[in-house]
Amino acid sequence: GAVVSQHPSRVICKSGTSVKIECRSLDFQATTMFWYRQFPKQSLMLMATSNEGSKATYEQGVEKDKFLINHASLTLSTLTVTSAHPEDSSFYICSARGTSGRGNEQFFGPGTRLTVL
Amino acid sequence: GENVEQHPSTLSVQEGDSAVIKCTYSDSASNYFPWYKQELGKRPQLIIDIRSNVGEKKDQRIAVTLNKTAKHFSLHITETQPEDSAVYFCAATYYNQGGKLIFGQGTELSVKP
Image (cartoon, rainbow over all chains, first blue to last red; front, side, top):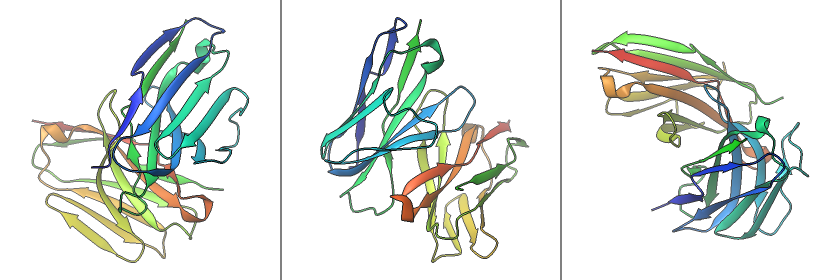
């Protein structure tokens, strides 16, 4: 139980385009989802926290107009990178926490490798 | 602000030896401390966690200790094996801020056969 999927696993796009990444909790309801970004050989940096049905809370330094987060249901959150540029190339990982019965534990998706040309 | 410091950044041990990774956190309200193992290009995998009402937890070759007074916690891996080689991250949950996780910088563990 407590499986989180992410789609796509890899995406390559041209500079200036927008990319949408989906994060789904497959067997539990995710009341809270988190979005992280990880650059090579670095740690996971929290970008934002989203609760179902409400606006996301962004971490300091993360542009909310560039990284659009929607958490429209208890099983789906999306991250849209708008007007992507090469410096946005990174590994984006979501996690979910909710009604799985395991308290604080967050369940991570497999990640999305974004490459912006 | 929220901060988790992790040391060392790299650790090389011989197979069969023990490995210890240490972390400190800044927020005394933190109440949940997970440890993750991440292989290249993969998601973080929870290997053990500890809550603030417990001082030590063990699961086979892996143990975690927590000192709330000093605000630090450590991961201990005994009888290391080559397949333990990976990057390990500690994290602390800031419960009063939506339960978000703040990660340490990571430790690249290399177990030499």
